[in-house]
Length: 320
Length: 320
Image (cartoon, rainbow over all chains, first blue to last red; front, side, top):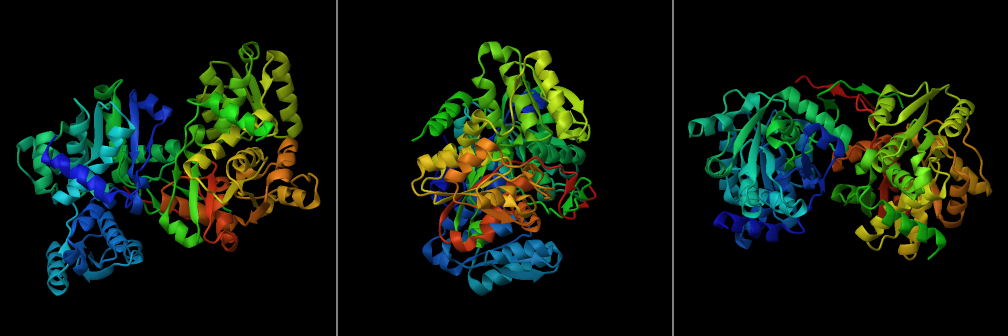
């Protein structure tokens, strides 16, 4: 046990009732294809459609009443923005989300739908950070970062905490890695609960900064990352990297084609809507079937926020 | 309690371990839209992607060893064919499926993938029945009908048996109706376990033979049924109609547009792949929001077997 794992346990107690205990599903066909027993932790079925709800809820519920009253803020155009907006609404406090002017209308609408205020800025990191500083100075809101934060890491770790209970005796846990909040939390929880478990990060070939960083022993930024996994383009965070270096068995990189094939299998065989970033764990399992032969493998399906008017395979509209 | 409900309990004991205990999921956004508390029984996450696995498993496991040895047979191009093939393989006995020459290749492949023999016939009911008689005469196989059968009705009822345990105190249960196996089984189980519950069948406007049959007190066949709900085009069965007449509160008919809208909401908000026939319960809940206001409503999502290369809304392929 560790201080870090205590934080995961505390997060679980704090967010109970605020997040779904998502199901763990299995599929005989995918087991046969992989040559292993696969246990899918369905965070695509989590509130707001992604594990991000766990960390955001933990951060928002950790605030003192005085801090909470002044609200929370972040800059994000992804699942963290929706998760923070949703968690703030549940506590009845204001949330302000800084979004670039290029963010798709559907994402702005989702954030606004959770009652958050949106501040639009130019699509550069400098403009986002300046806009966020202005919001914090004006409102006194607490900045909740998307991944490089102990409260976020502990919150994301609660998915693996549940997984270890729902699918005992796992030999491996495969988990997507972008900023590293989910992977760090997963490694902490899995190692505390599953003796001998190997936790692996699954990363797109075109955004492999975590793999390169581990190989050279220090954090390297992602350079022009390109991948169908739009949730995994960020560079691994500082705190996240420290945990990952110490606890993660390996990073397995996967091609976009393999990710899309895995995503389609999850739709077809498991009837689950999973976004590319969420399907990468299954793609990694197929690519490393030799390592996993006969083992019990947990796979975290991290999210399901796909634009259903735009899928990465050809679709004909059926006349109705 | 009734003899019929005893058969559901017996089916549950018989098929345990052969089918998934599917999760019941909830969605705050859909609750807000419907003005009620909705509990979704996810039979799209059942083996072979549909509740049909329950009835088929019950029928196959009910056979005496001598009968089982000679195998099972049916005519179907839908989910029942896959379910029977899968259940037969699990017991290690032969299955023969009579399929019309017009059946899509993807459905033939799925049945063959479960190890069943396929007999192809002309796409008429007479040809199907003749082919089936020939198979039964030649092999001694037992014919397992898709819905008009007590073992099938009892097996399908196990979904509602689980639902009543997973979501206590339901006021309503909404369930698709085609041949009526699922609706009959659901009504038997729900009435035995949920005092005062109202069980409603959801039927496409373009295939409303059950609604018309109930209205005039005798079974009327479907005439040129047309609907996006390809699983609900069959006429209600004889045994099924007797149960439905006695136990079902009402049949609510729904337009195809409403079904497609509900299906897309299930993809988008609940991250579930549901076929049109499976989404009709949610469409019926929206159409009858006045009746359901504030109530606890169980909705059976009956299946998820959608051709993902063909969806009932416009989809652009995303360049990867």
